[in-house]
Length: 207
Image (cartoon, rainbow, N blue to C red):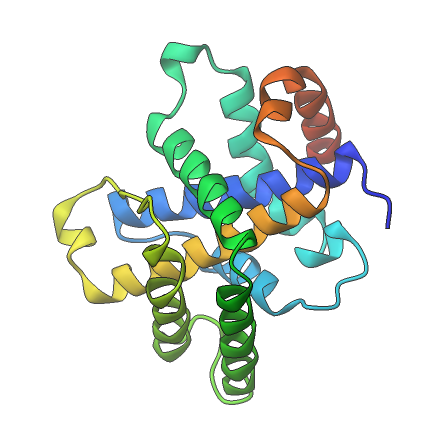
């Protein structure tokens, strides 16, 4: 399949969406449950026919598109440092993961096993968050660097929030994998900012 800059913009917005959700949970102890479910659903869309379908349509990625647009339009000294750092770290982790076939296989196997649990539990059930969080902790978090999440200590120290954050970071890695498969590179973000912003605006207008 031939991918376009539109595909890369959608996938990168998926990374930003995951990072935005992590930030909200870390600072407020909550985030929009519907948006969380959209991000987690991407982990189980193994046979999506298009980049857009991975997110169930453009509406599913609207939070990420807005976050991406904000980062692209804000002056350097006013950009959200935490989200920038989370995104960069996930992209670095994805590159390391792409070279580790054994770990990729383990993640796929465990996601397929978790998918069978969705017959009994919703994506927002504690059991699903725990299983996805464990996958992230047992695999991605061992690669380094670790995603150092900033926020309010009462929320960060809550075990349920910790599982939700790890599960969402796993979804962020899924989007990072998709972005790279679409031809995304970190240099591209620097040199094609205007093109990313233009497409981002078009996608937001289409929602």
